[in-house]
Amino acid sequence: FVFNGRAEGNLSAATQDRIRKAAEQLDYRPNAVARGLRRRRTAVIGLVTDHIASSPFAGALLRGAMETAWNEEHLVLTVDSTGDPAKEEAAVAELLDRRVDGIIYAAMSLHRTRLPQGLDRTFTVLANCLPENGSRAAVIPAERAGGRAAARLLIDAGHRRIALVGGMGDIASSERLRGLRDAARGAGLELRKDWIVRSGGEISAGYDGALKVLDGVASQERP
Image 1 (spheres, rainbow, N blue to C red):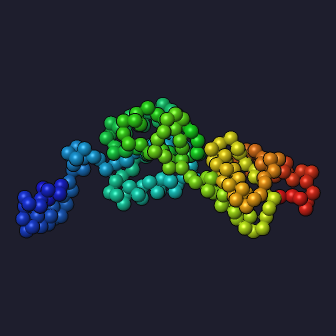
Image 2: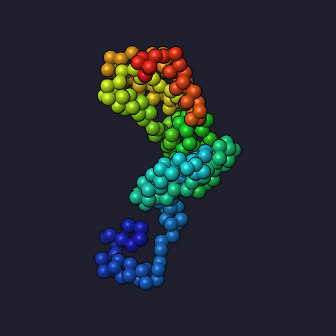
Image 3: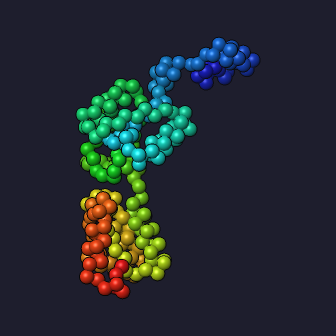
């Protein structure tokens, strides 16, 4: 009763105090597994990732999940699938067998993805990705707001000729472009189509894209 919150009304305060002192002296700890079976909750959250755990860029996501769970007296059990769909499905099945209270499915890059089977059997939240089909609760970066903020910084500094060099085929880049257009529209600016240049994510690709924007444009007319 004392360790499962049911002592009130069943045991006196003095008895509860003696039990706690005895437990402390004996270094007794309640069985978390047994308590989970009784409450039908394990206080464990599963986190399945593609390449995040092996990436130096994703520490903040993992740290945020773990810290939030810890503050709510939960633990996070993490599995990195290294992008292997079969491993992802096996990981989800294993987490479900362990009766986790829910699963976070996280991706290294923002994209639409085919979700592994089994996620519909528990409460699931997507992090940095969207489902290929249907809808799911998801937490994704505010890419459009980021693009808008970057453009506003240039506009507020007095710049009127703005170009964008970046990948345009992915969700993040498309949302950033929408943010740029929002800011330009709000400032009454017109974006030149030939100054919106699609490039890869490598430094060399960005360099080539910038040269494409500047090529043949007089210095006083450049962005």
